[in-house]
Amino acid sequence: MSPKSNIVLIGMPGSGKSTIGVILAKRTSHDFVDTDVVIQSVEHRSLQDILDKEGYLALREVEARVLQSLRLENHVISTGGSAVYSDAAMQHLKQNGTCIYLDVSVATLRSRITDYETRGIAKRPDQSFADLFEERTQLYRKYADITITADVLNQDAVCDAIMLQLTR
Image 1 (cartoon, rainbow, N blue to C red):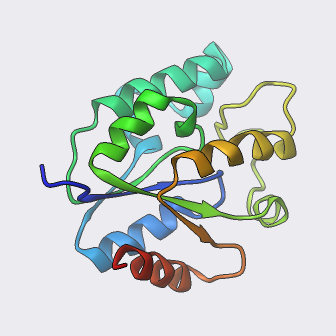
Image 2: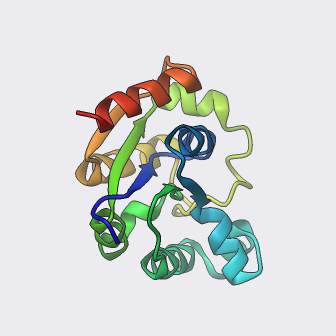
């Protein structure tokens, strides 16, 4: 595999990883993979079902295992919001990928996510969205090679900003 041929998108649920990923894949002539979809395909059940039956830690373990099993090149990879909880998985993705954090404010995320309780978000049962945001933001920043403030940008502008940073 050629070095850093993948573009790995990280960020909170609702930050636009899947939508931006598809557009970015078209622009870069890369294939696109949404790791939440891969997890559901491998497990033959929804993320919410894993959460409901086994809990958030089980979902994180499944996610880490699936991410570490990926062998991709020339892909845009949209990760689940909790991918950053596994250092091994993130290091694996970063071996062949530039990691881009789509940074979006809590207020914007709240306006975008209407299905917080049923979306399949790997969080502690007692954890508020704001607490989850705070906890994950530190991890996103830790793994990001590039951070794009995507709060006020439309999808094309986010992709433009990513493309500009990738060519630097």
